[in-house]
Image (cartoon, rainbow, N blue to C red; front, side):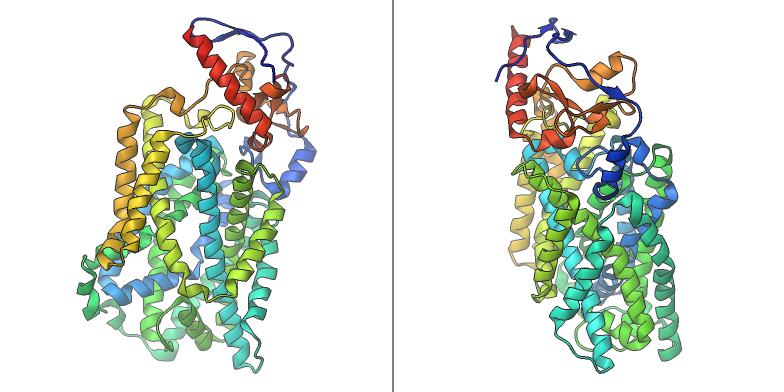
Length: 559
């Protein structure tokens, strides 16, 4: 490998580009072939260009899919059985505020940077930590696909059993996967907004209808508002705090916000942050859904211990075909988005680690197969434990993200200038990765200790520890922890010519497609030819050459 020589001043600024470095091929409109390809890919391995963004209504329709998850209906009822209705409502109210404020930040940064969770994680953890973030996110969401899909399978099985058709659970699980997975074949901007928009009225009718149906059939009583179990004191913490921490276990929602908010238009950033991804949304998603769950559990007849499965079977038993349609509409909305998010993060993980880049549709098929196999197990008995352990990592990611965003703001680093290109970020950022490993390790130990008190305190302890360690580490951080300085930056070349790196497109020598200059780099192993973010991420030769060039550049600056 030969790295072209270049001239630089004392500050390391490139003063001239050698003649053997090819000029950039710049265009200002999207290639129709690229647009057609991304109808399914949805720029999953790229920065989302401004031309691919969607309006506030489409963004809202995409995001309301999560709102209809039966999980939020049942978890509220489950928490109320543990600590009482009043404590639950207080804890959930505090969660509404926390979710709203945190995701306001996540939404704004994702929108301005156009990055995914996997891509932005490079800025905080380096390339290694970012790959783990993609794996963590993809697996966690896949678990939710399994859990929400199992609810539909149980509802179908119960309904048809009541009507004389009995079949193995595996049959209904297969039906669920076969109809839900293809719904995520196309992306956020071309399909999910429309699907969720069509199904939204059915979800609302089902939510309101279940309450009305229960009142008509069983009558109304205020007893559900004053439910207070005697065993709440055994938890060792105030009931409202227990409820708040339970909802901390679902802070993977922040990662979901990030990967959807990046598709919003820049002019809608404030509206999306405050409304679509802000507090008003969580009033409905968390508080209203939980209240409905609490009322239904105290009103209708449910056989056996409360679980997502028993609660949904109870609703279907009460409402019949209408209850089944509600479950189908609500779970289809949420799982279409879950399949999408899981497949994109699996795609990112394998492209970053084993350098195996396959279309997102391929990974959608892989996720579908894995989901079906897991649904054949007694999934609802083990999945909550797995999510508890993963929650220790997720709250740490959220804490470090918040601290990093605050640091960027204080340092004057614009969100739309964040460095995430694999050839210009180091393999490891010791500040971020160290804070994440230590905080998650403490959280995992607390969860595995087996004690109720330790398990309840694990998420907040991991969150605070991650944020504090990272904030302290940033006071001693070196620039090399965040970026590898290299010459011949396409962003700078485009800006020097008076163009906007967010609007100018540069053709990648490897795939032949043109992407915005903001994500482009030059490949030292191929005469510094322009290379896009996706091709750079899965090319070992490029990575080795970029690392070597960064070392040489640093040595030259020291001379």
